[in-house]
Image (cartoon, rainbow, N blue to C red; front, side, top):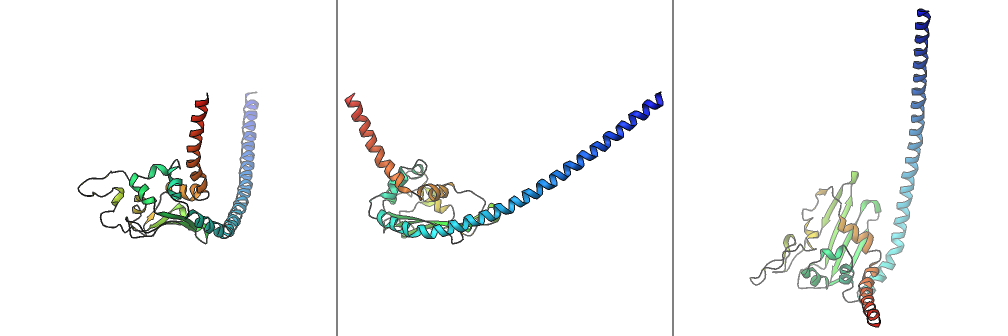
Length: 240
């Protein structure tokens, strides 16, 4: 009896082992099939990304004349970009009082994707002649390399004598020290070491490119609208 019992237990263990091997084999086969499908999806996604880039490139060319017309009209509106920046919740925090004076000479802003849109883009600030620097154009360019690395180049600002803001701090004038707030123009100084490669994410560039540039009128109108709405609220309170 004891021998029969031992034989039965051994047989059950063998059967369990076989079942386990069968389950493991089925699991491996399922995972292999799943991987094949994922590889197929990856190819489809890559193809879709390429098509999206082609469409984006096409419509960038279609948008260009409209952007040019928009820029021409903006030039006729005093302090348009200053107002848009100052009414933007994030960008307004970046402009010091001295920056705001400089921005009064800002005629236009241009954001341009490279012809191959996945390779990068540039942001250009276009100024009228001003007492602060010699440049009429300040450009910052972002070139996308592999593995999420971005190469950044920026205009080295040629400040006029006594007007420089090195490292974002206004120079002393007539023996008086100006405010030591960080200037928006230090955004260009950050890339004085041209040609270097950075593994960074430029939040300011993203905000300008993806939020402000597509529809700056929204922020310009917000500034104007907020004044009007406040007046309306005061009138309503008076009536009450």
